[in-house]
Length: 290
Image 1 (tube, helix red, strand yellow):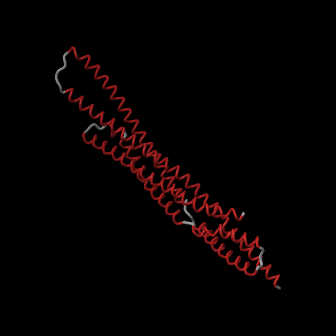
Image 2: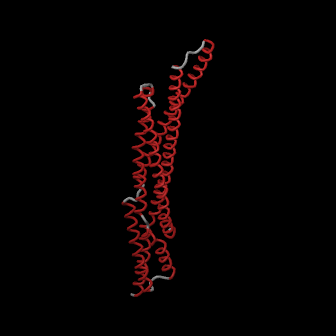
Image 3: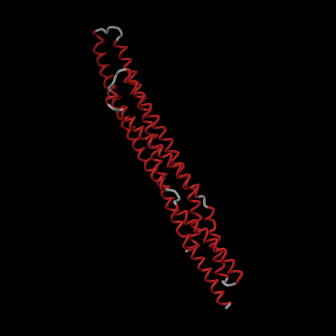
């Protein structure tokens, strides 16, 4: 009778270990998938940061060229209203005006090109922020994984109770007891995983990426309008002010997009750190259960 009881307790220990194996083995794989997505998202949002920052730099360069063009126009008007030019100086004056016209044309083309580049960079940054927001929204500890972790923690606790009973009854050999203790030691750390920290960082990245979508899209549209022929060709004082305001707004939005993209990148990078900590615990548990 005592033998049958010992066998039953020994089987209970084996079943308890299998229960831990069934409930804990998949956690490591799930966390590694989240870690991979966080890594991809870090790279994506980093691109968004770079393109938005590039758009700001290009926009500032464009403003500098536009300021030079405006100064040239004022100088030309002042010179035109100056003293009468002698016949002997007319040819030189005409040649100088031709050179100025060529230089002006080159700068106008460069300004237009820079405006198009800024618009393209803002569109790219917007696209990366959209991708970042989508990935971040999916890259959280979902209910399935949370339930898996809860079951794992419970099964480890049950294994501890079963192991203690087997030890007291002397119903399992020393090797079985030692293995059960190893499983408990390596897998009990799962209850200390900071899942809320992972989710907070993912949500933070998602929110910032969503903000980046808004500022990036607004910046793309504003930059496109500012660089349109209709706006650029309006030589009136009102037209100049409108173009200047649109360009300034585009640059501000580019800077804002770069800032929030950088924030999202930081959140994604710190999420990787939090996942690595949790994943390390799960990996050790999975390794001993193999």
